[in-house]
Image 1 (cartoon, rainbow, N blue to C red):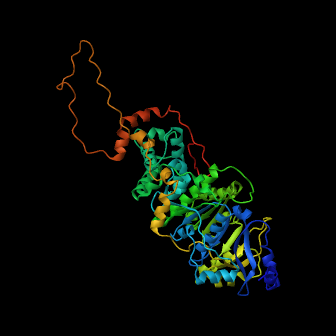
Image 2: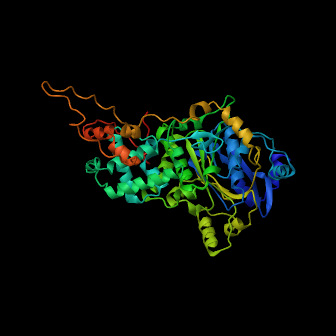
Image 3: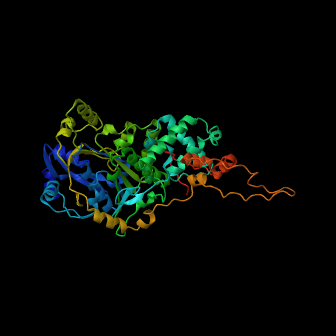
Length: 523
């Protein structure tokens, strides 16, 4: 079918919508327009490549095809030379690294939407938080994670969050490097000890009671096995910006099934990755293609229970990171999961079907409809009747204006729609050039070691002239044996600790310049 023949079969009202997606520059193909229940392959729905750093939202109920939409967009970005970051929450996106399987359903979908389907995989790197999984371990130091993000993970309230910020400030000033959780725990233990309580007076607003709450939260968090995510070697997020020799963008896939029961941890860790990119990347303004597109899956977990300071930091990061060439797509069930200030910055929208079984569902449906521009559809009805792999789309045109709302039957991904085997993952990880750089954890001297190191006993002084040497009878009797000291007692009782307590007031430390989330690195 020729282009003229295709366009001739498109009704005038539908053609008006299709004209809104007739871009002249590079664009990603999403699918074909749906009109009156008919798929129109002559009316292609696309999104300009240059507009993908204006952020986006992929939403819809469970089972409506959100994951396949991510896969479809990611593989086309890679083909255009744009690196991609994907969080694989359910463990079923690893197939993007392998060619898809030609089958009846795939070929039928391709025929419906006018797609010339050809199997193909993407160059991938596989990662896992702290090494829990098959991937290359992603770790962050406590210092770079910062007090705001760590407070979210520890579920501290606003007052405790502010107090933790003062602890970080204190450690920065005194040159106490916070690499892992035991470093931070040791500093808080010092501040709550007899020797360190005087130092609390130098930290305005931090009470001994609040410091104790923070210490207990840290201890409980570490006992849950969460300490593996913090340490060195710290991951350099610049690794996400790579392309391979033939110009394809690398897809960085973070495996998260092993930490599905720690939703606040992995959602906050994703925010750290984004904040770290913001911290390091230079301003580039508007670009022809993004430097990276970052997909933030299960986004509702990030915002749930977030403090005002945390939400403000997210909003500002999303607003400003666009000028650094990074696009962010939030993936969740309904737009109401995303705060209005963030939602207002998401120019590209792919809304899959919503359910309306309960009064709350109906309310969410109406709220979703209000977030779209006026359209030629009855969106309230349409959003409850879309099939799997269908969505309502509106994006930013090349001029930055919203395109007409378009019901769309989405294309089929050309990579494998399902996970690859564990053996294939292990082989890919061990064959990566990054494996030797990040696989093995390193525990160097930092705050914990400085506070717990025991100094060598000083040699006994020579006797004064004319004075007999001390004998066992004249020396002090040894103290009765005591039980093994606790960890805190070991910390505050050590010679190095007491020496440090005396000298901290005059010790010159280098304070870290911290970013929006309090994240920073010593570079």
